[in-house]
Length: 83
Ligand code: FES
Image 1 (cartoon, rainbow, N blue to C red):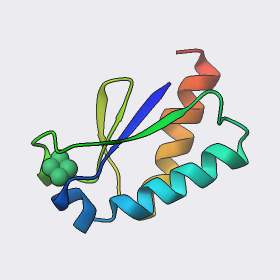
Image 2 (tube, helix red, strand yellow):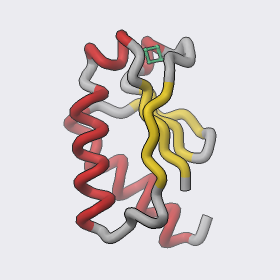
Image 3 (tube, protein in one colour):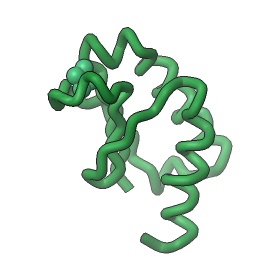
Image 4 (cartoon, helix red, strand yellow):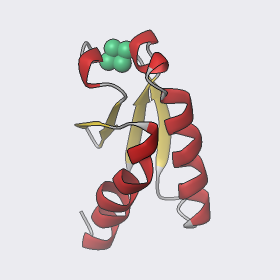
């Protein structure tokens, strides 16, 4: 699974760095390093929705405080469902 976090300036201001750190920690804690490929991404023009995170090409809007929920729902949820 490929997860890309926008590191453009608007998303950076909204906390993309924190989102990346939290996701890295959650991926490692859940033993998913081999399964989830975390990447930085450039601005996709969706700055108003930032922090922009894409999971296999689907765009989500994530905040530092919603990162854990996002991880459980969209990353663990998808992996468990075999998507
Ligand atoms: S800076 Fe993230 S979408 Fe523009």
